[in-house]
Amino acid sequence: MKRARPRTTAALGLLIAAWLLAPNAARAQFMEEMYPGETLFGECRDCHNFAEGAGPGRKAPNLWGVFGRVAGTAPGYDYTPELKASGIVWTETTMDKWLRGPGNMVLGTRMDFQVPNETQREYVLEYMRNADIAGYIRAIQGLK
Ligand code: HEC
Image 1: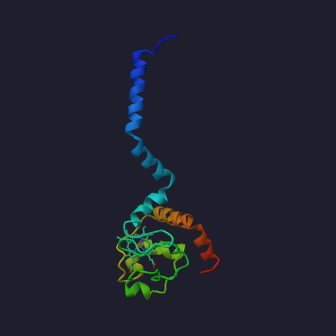
Image 2 (image 1 turned 90 degrees about the vertical axis):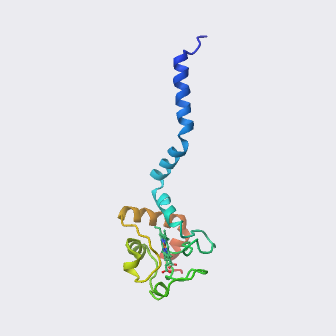
Image 3 (image 1 turned 60 degrees about the horizontal axis):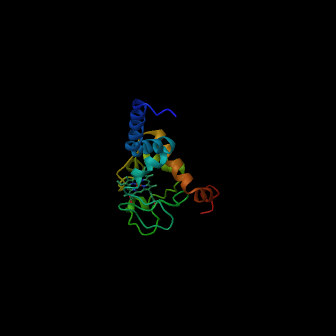
């Protein structure tokens, strides 16, 4: 049997080393390309929770079940009177407008964050819809 040439072995070693050093970055990039909404939603998680039965996040209400919900009604969060009085029902349309500029939609709201890019808003809403698909379907059927 022929032995592998040292140069081939060294090149192979370099390749393996590169792969071992890269996986985190590579995985992050892969996630971002495959699931842009999930990645973008990570920013919402700085303030919000998004989990069934969870209480509010660090600075903002739990967004689980938000489709079809009346604004300012998630339990355990102390909303601004302005948002509570807004009468908004959260749908893709109202949330798209909200994410464009919460303060333009509800003067005096405490949410100080916006997503000016339309495609990014679509990705975020798509992610939220898919994550809680049962709640979304109930909402579009008018069941809550
Ligand atoms: C810097 C903190 C912060 C970030 C980041 C943030 N929010 Fe908020 N959000 C808030 C706060 C605070 C409120 C409550 C506002 C009020 O009471 O006036 C809120 C309220 C909301 C509401 C209304 C909820 C309800 O129960 O009526 C929605 C919907 C919402 N945010 C969606 C999002 C989405 C989607 C993102 C990410 C794209 C996001 N927010 C990012 C702070 C944040």
